[in-house]
Structures are given as C-alpha cells and as structure tokens.
Image (cartoon, rainbow, N blue to C red; front, side):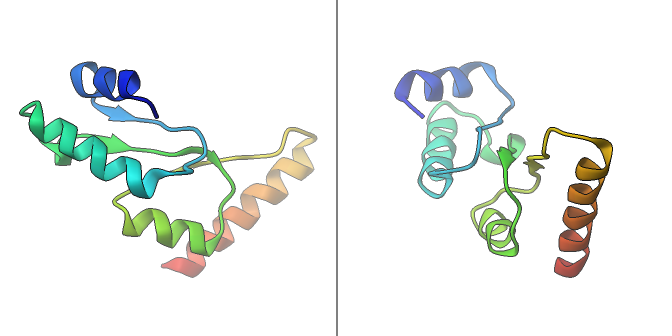
Length: 97
C-alpha cells in the first residue's frame, strides 16, 4: 500500500479490502493512525482481506491484528472441487470456535 492509496482510503472509504493480506500487520496500524489524524474513528472502518488461503495460523494472525472478516480464495473448477474446498474451509472455521 502506497501513500496515495492510504490518502484515498482515509478520505473516501469506510474500509479497505486488501488483496491477499501480506503486510497487514504493519499497514493496519498505519491506516488507523492516518484515520485518527484525519479525525476519523478507526473502529468505524473494516479491513477485510480478499483472496488469501485459509489456515488456522493465518486466521489467528488476522484476528490478532484486528481483522474481523476475511474473504478466502476458492479454486476455479468443477462444482465438486469448489464444494470440497468450501467444506474444508467450513471444517477449519468450526475447529477454531
């Protein structure tokens, strides 16, 4: 994330959907600081990583840095492959509860 994107997020957006999630541990605090500087409440925005591969470690990492929601990647392919991936993701999430 560069300074121009940060500027636009703070000025116009009510959240951020980064692709993948790499670097979020550093970027989220910077985003929140920029929001506070602009007089906005960081708790009023959401960061929702898009397109990452779910693992227990990644989900716990996201939770520890303030991510409350994720959109995980699914394979492109026949229904049986997509449904199997969804089933694995559902099992992963159920195990974390």
